[in-house]
Amino acid sequence: MKITVERETLLKPLQLVSGVVERRQTMAILGHVLLVARDGRLTATATDLEVEIAATAEVPAEAEGQTTVPARKLVDICRALPEGSSVSLTAEGQRVTVRSGKSRFVLAALAPDTFPTMERLEAAQRFDIPQATLRELVERTHFCMALQDVRYYLNGLLLEVAEGRVTAVATDGHRLACCERAVEVSSPGTQQVIVPRKAVGELLRILGDDETPATVELGTNHIRVLVPGVRFTAKLIDGRFPDYRGVIPAGGERHLVADREALREALSRAAILSNEKYRGVRLAMADGTLRIQAHNPEQEEAEEELEVRYQGGPLTIGFNVSYLLDVLGALPGETVEASFTDPNSSCLITGAGAEGCRYVVMPMRL
Image (cartoon, rainbow, N blue to C red; front, side, top):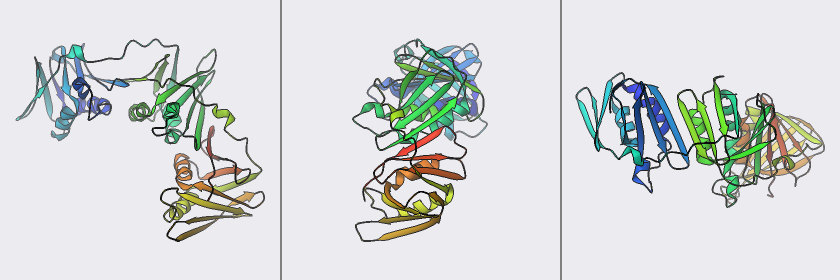
């Protein structure tokens, strides 16, 4: 195999796929990227056996073929070369030579036929969705995923596909994010898949923020997302996601409407003196006023007061401030609305500009 290509043209697909490569692997081949030059295109593929990303660039080959190259070393070499420089890759046996100007690098290659690739995906469901819409669904919800929870099905993002809509849901048992969008999809029933945490992060890296369509294929064990020049495939978490609709409260009789940015800043300041372990803050609401209080074991205290629109009787309730800040960071609009029932019940948070998105946060005792 031999190709000559501009640095930027080679670097883009390599950067897209290299995030999958773990620094420590159980198999040496997993530290490599598979390069295939065929039919005027160069395809770079990387995998960790759970997630696979293949990115393609238009690159005429002087000699077609395939090889594997240490992924991070090749990316580092390309990054270090001058912008606009020309790069040639020549694969001969177990060596790959990279040349650019007066620079030359010789990398060790492994047999390309030993590179593991995901088996053929039999799609039970296939639909197109604008990249911006799919990206929004993931961005608005993924921060609520659990981290290494023994309930393994919480360590991922639920995608639910039904007639005319796609819903993304994430929860760690203490908070929940749900975002729903209307999408032209024909589905005889409701299909649910759980996408693992790492796959969710990689998916955000490849999705654009425009209306270019992404093709989503759902199988029994895999999800595949196709965007121009990139093929993303991931194994799914085998488990049953909790009934999230039963967790979302209909809304209490107490309603709070506040300026989102002002509330976020006030919570951030109060959080400085909250307990570092539990991160608790107390919200005291009365007519037109929200008082935020925090304290820690060193007997230090913080208090913030905001003018808000509030309906309902006086209420004092505690929350993990990090959970509230995450929600306020995910909402795009100028105002945020929260509804409460009592100090022991979850609150429901929504926001202007994020219709179809709902957030549930459980209270904590302080």
